[in-house]
Image (tube, rainbow over all chains, first blue to last red; front, top):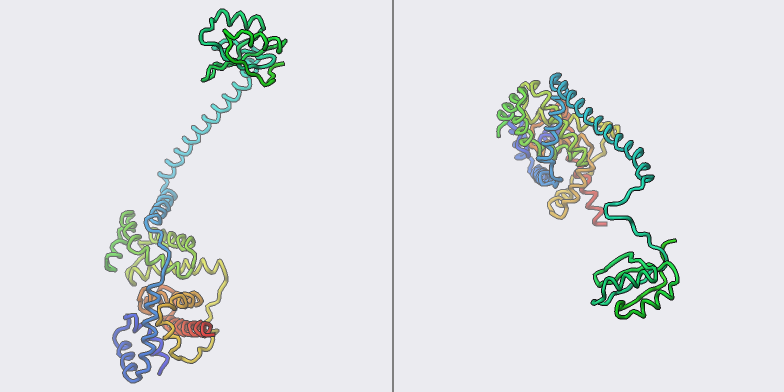
Length: 205
Length: 185
């Protein structure tokens, strides 16, 4: 069997052979039935090649990518569009420069004004800050305690309310000196103070 | 869609019609991607080549003269770009003479191939083919092209296409027989 016929067999199998060449192969098959095996092999091989599994093609994403490339290409080749793009870029750069300048101004203001604020004797709108001093004690007041009586007691032991009331009605008092004596006085006024609790926590100077 | 429809799309593309370009892309994208991927075996690179190929279509649509089928012209661009990428990655020789002698043509390979379970062997053997042989095999059996069309795509004489296809087929037999003997052992 000539090499020519063997070389034509794959194209006979894929159906692309015509005319004299097709007739030549068909005659060769008729004369030599063993070629049938070769044909079967090629048919199976073609089937396997056609059913190969490939990863999915890029599809519409690939089209978007192509359209972007084409847009860039058109921009590159169109002097008017390029000029417009340049103007847009320059405008964008103008905005960018303005934004940078604004940031720098803000930084400058912070550097200049913040130390002035720190040195100024400014009072917060909510009133002067309470500076806790001494040890802290948690107390709850009796429901029927009078404000005047509580005030007198706290003044007597030089205590200040530094926090509270909590959701459970607990206030924090700071007691700057004579802590034990102050605790005794608080515990003695059971008509005003329902509970006294302290763990030695100390605040302030 | 017929080849003349593809030619009409190319004419519109050459006038800058982007919708025609999108239609042309959708018409050929899947087949072309598989063709490229079968040689590169790398989906990212195959996507790059696919994009470059269609971008070339956009640039050069007016150079299509209708002397070949649209698909032949398109696959030719893709083939050139794919081979160029492969050459940059690893220099290779397309040596028709340096081909191993084929062992006897027993039916073993055919029997092996007839079994569905041997699909992975076929895939493996296709991957071991030389690039030039695999390209011809793909175009012959996946695209069912004539050897004349393939010759235009891979830019070589028609006789070379037939020789490459013959060698590709023999190499597949050789590989499948080897795989089968490995299984038996």
